[in-house]
Amino acid sequence: MKAIKLYLEGNSFRSIERLLKVNHQSVAKWVKAYSESLPKAKVPEKPKVAELDELFTFVGKKKTKSMS
Image 1 (cartoon, rainbow, N blue to C red):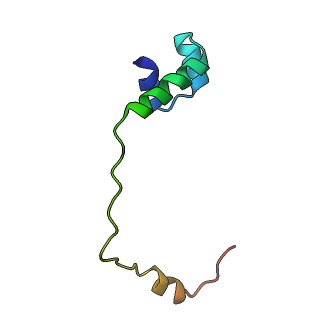
Image 2: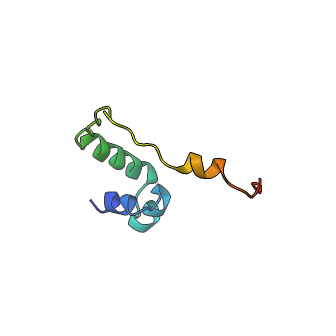
């Protein structure tokens, strides 16, 4: 459906309303119905190993003061 495609491209309900000459509430209902028809997203399993970044080391040794 064109309204769904326009919404996924970043258009608001009201801009789609103006483009397609339909009520923005209808567009909202179509988007909601479409999103409910999609399969549920898989929840990732809990990670077994986590790696830490070196950001803490960098911030701890930073020689200039923060601007904030």
